[in-house]
Length: 161
Image (cartoon, rainbow, N blue to C red; front, side, top):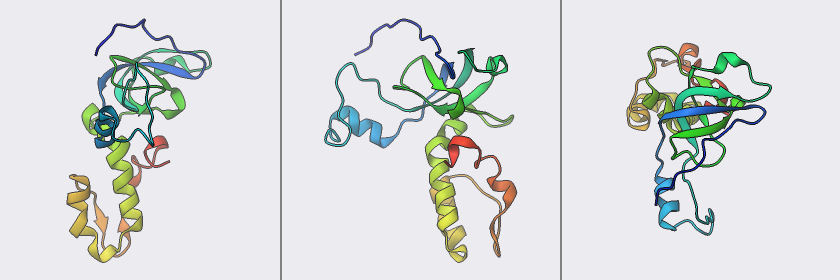
């Protein structure tokens, strides 16, 4: 069921994000079907999702105005299956040039998984699971694991915390 709601207004430390892309997780589908109600109880109206990629359109008190018009990805407060979302500014990461919003949104979850696997990997088997786990290539040095340049963007803020 869809419904119209008032446009969100940012509070202190928050940003309003005009949502372009949301990551859809398998878990979201299970919660919507009620299959995970023992772990994730919901009551209507329920808005699924927890992350967005989009453009900051307004900021709240204590947030630098330079955030406005930045393309960002990050966690939301409340659901993310919306046209306009509220996000804590400290959860947002500016999307670097050359990376699309869909790819950035995928990194919210898949990026964390890939980095975690890299950190736990047996270096000898790195190339066996990397393409399947990430569906993107990460340059590596077989003797020392992933290069520092391959981790630099993914290690920012919310992607690896």
